Every structure is written in C-alpha cells, then in structure tokens.
View 1 (cartoon, rainbow, N blue to C red):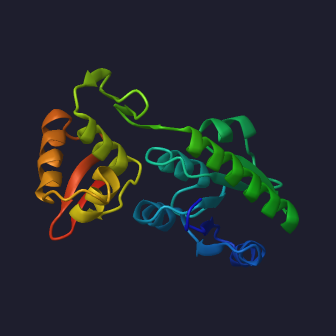
View 2: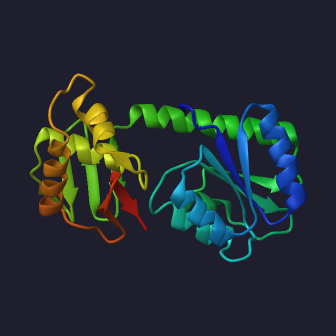
Length: 227
C-alpha cells in the first residue's frame, strides 16, 4: 500500500464523516472529508486515495454515478455507504465497480474490519497484476503487448515500460529525471532528452484515447492525463 494512507470519506452528513474519520484515524489512516459528488470527483482525479468510502445519496453527483465515473480511470477500492431505507441493489453496486457496501447505522469495528479486508484484497490483486486497461487501451507488462482499439501496437521495450509506468500513475506529473530513474534505472547516465524522444514516439504510435492522453506539463515533465 506504500506511503499512501489517505481515505476519502464522501458523505454530506458531517456527523457520519466525523465518526468514520475517528475510527479510521485511530487505526493510523489519514482521512479527507468531502460533502458532495462533484468535489469528490475532482479531488479523486487530482490525487488518488488509498480507498474511498462513498455514500449512495449525495448532492451534485449521486454515489452510483460517481462510482461509475471513478471506474473509468482507476480501480482504487470503493466501499458504498447506504442508509437502511435506501433502495440499493447490491449486485448492481458491485457490477459498477464497488468493492463492498455497508448499511447505516453501522458498527465502527465492522467498518474498520471491512476497510482492512478490502485493502488486503486490493493489495493482493495489485501485486499479482502486471496489466492496466483504459477505454480502447490495454497494456500487459508480462507479455510486452499494447493493444489500442483492438490492434497490437509495435513498441520498443523502453517505450512500453515508459507508457506502462505513466498509465499506472494517472494524472500524476513526473519530471524527466523521475522517469529516467523509474523506467531506465538509477544507474542510467544518459541524456534526459531520451524521455522526450520516447514520449514523441508514443504519441506518434498511439495518439490520444477517448478520455486519456499523454500530456506535457511545461517546465515540469509529463503525465498520463485521464479526464
């Protein structure tokens, strides 16, 4: 799970947010409380949390819609929160990408146990996974294959490794030196313009997707931008 300990709590009920926050912070997690769907979506795009606890009924964008939007660009774990009287289809919730759901009122110990169980599952899946997918795009590091719109794209090993690295860190900006360290290795003594050349080739071979693209952040570096 790395250093990321942030859990986003998305609920317009301040008391619920505070209660969940207290339980989770006792367990060593950091929490961010968000009260509406639109703010939550923007925040998730800006910085991915460790996990999202998401209320079904939200102002702006409801929980179901928000879950579907988030699943377009990340598989970060999501636990849905529902009130006892809410109409909630468990199967539908899981089909659109929720990892679990909890009915309010809930027991604090049960909530923490569910969070830890989902994180354990997610960490196991992440460790076993060497592929990433986005609309029209799939990358397999073990097979060294990239498919775009159903067609194989002929990339060099370093082009593929660079693309895979950026795709597994959506919306995060990396400097050229950071990319050299992570893709070419700490011992690489080459010119940082090597990164520019590889990015240029990737753009020529793949282009932009329906909701993603390789973006230059002037004066900083590059990112795999997901809208």
